[in-house]
Length: 405
Ligand SMILES: Cc1ncc(COP(=O)(O)O)c(C=O)c1O
Image (cartoon, rainbow, N blue to C red):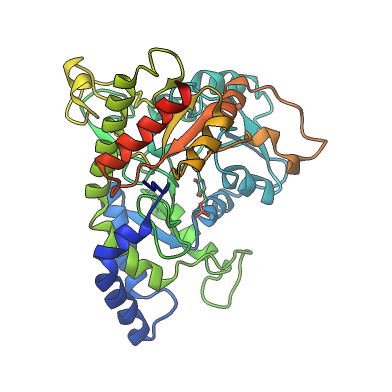
């Protein structure tokens, strides 16, 4: 049996006609820059996230870049972020001439550790840190209650890198606390949230795309100006921006896919539950060959549990949308070779922590961030896409078990 890491052909088989119609509509309209498709997607994604403003942009990377530009981040500034993410999270900070300040991750969620953040912020006596950039890795929100508390304490803006997490939720009240049984969507808790529509994301286009969402109308206006070369009005440039616009063909396709998004999240969550049960049965967890992913943030609300066991424990969890299903495994690299030899797709997100990247150069301080480094050495992502069948999952688990036998 062949089990690819992601199979967009399956999705295309039931979306094809609608996609072709949508693309044809854009072509026939001759509105090839911005226009009604982009405006409608912006409204629909903003409404989905429960915020007032959505601004379509050219990619998740540009969503982050333009958000930091709108904050005026530049040389001499520092941005507090996680060392365990896709390169873009750090790349945008460096491109603006600012410096990333890394704090280690929580080993269970793989997201930035608020306790470590608190220590770094307390030491920043010169107030060089100008923004906080948490990442909701793999589709699970970082501990936003704690992060927003720190942000408010230090008066810092939070830009959420929600590239992998559109639709993920965590328990948070309107006042920023945990209680009240309220839930907030990824991207809606900080000053702004940044999404990627890279094809492998839960909401993926047929090319590059992204969006910034924000409650703050003034911030939204700044971004709208920056993504058109800083022009306001047209041809009058009070500042230097860029061309960060979302393509209307992508917007038209994404509008179709948005109507499937909740259904796809549910399918991914069911697949995660099935893997968890199969791996538990296999004995591999008990024998310490692997550690399963966990939706970690506990709260009172019980309706959004991953599986029945959590409900029985009387706790709720983060609403993890499983953009990736990531395990820690022993003998990771040998397992990868074995799985690939068995026609099972898998990937490492990411083999190096950001502070270990060569591009930082010799002048960047040598850091020890053991949790991020350990995660980079131990993690593996298995196929989790919505159309994955139960038989395929059983095959994956059987082959993993065979490797450790
Ligand atoms: C955490 C994270 N940040 C940023 C990005 C950048 O998004 P894009 O590839 O759309 O530029 C990605 C996407 O791959 C990502 O996973």
